[in-house]
Image (cartoon, rainbow, N blue to C red; front, top):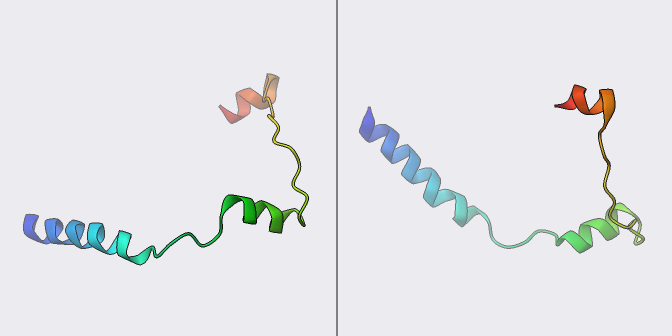
Length: 56
């Protein structure tokens, strides 16, 4: 059982990096596509009061 688990984990560790062959889309390209070339400025949403308690 331990050998099977070890081989499975080893296989997953080896297969993961080999499957990723580069960056599919950069963050800048994603934002430009999602917002039709005009992304909004970054902002912060503060969750206070009942909303903050519900999320926490």
